[in-house]
Structures are given as structure tokens and as C-alpha cells.
Image (cartoon, rainbow, N blue to C red; front, side, top):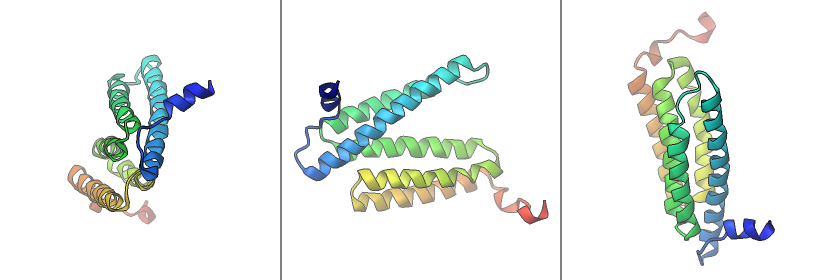
Length: 155
């Protein structure tokens, strides 16, 4: 069992920093694949659980990113994972009502933490700017009435 896990978590990268980042990305992808299996099961057994297409499609994307990380392309794999997380979050912002879509911003901080573990510092700044700008732009575009919502004290 231990040799199987070692084989699964081996990367061809020669640089120690790239090896560390590739290992982080591979661990994250394995956790996301397990979560996608659970999401697919929930979608199948729930009467209004939705489509299995999203967990299957994201699993295919994550498997491709895993293969890249295993070959030593840690930054490319990390960008794929960050892009998948960001597109899912922005899709949620666009499809939720105004009050709940604001809460997605809190979950996007996890994306910045993931990026800080798996990307280089200049790339982290790109992710931070992209996450912040993308969230605000999607929020403003999808919910133009957001700034007109009554204050919580008035409810």
C-alpha cells in the first residue's frame, strides 16, 4: 500500500521547489476527485440533485492537471486548478441571489491560500488580482441591484 501511494505521489521534477509545489497540487487534486465522487453520488441519489455532468467534467480536468503535475509541470497544473475553482465560484456568484452571492467572496480566500501554496510569488499576485477583480466584476454585472439592497439594520 505504501509503495502504491509513493508511486501515486511521485513527480519527475528535479527542482525541489517545483517538487514541493507539484506535490501540493497533486494532493489537492486527489482530495477534489474524492469530493467529486461524493458530489456525483449526491446528484444521482437526490431527486433534485442536479446533473452529474459538472463533477464528471471537473474530474476529467483535474485528472489532466494531475498528470501535468506528475510530469513536473507544477505551475501549469496549479493554474488549471485555480482556474477551475475560480470559474466555479464566479458561476455561483452569477447564479445565486444577491444576498447569498456576496458570501462566495469568503470562500475565494481559500483559493488565494491554495495559490500561495502552489504558485510562485509573482503568479500569486496575478491570482489575487484576478480573484478580486473577477469577483467584483461578476458581482456588479450579475447583480446590479446589489448596492441598493436595504441595510441589515433596517430589517
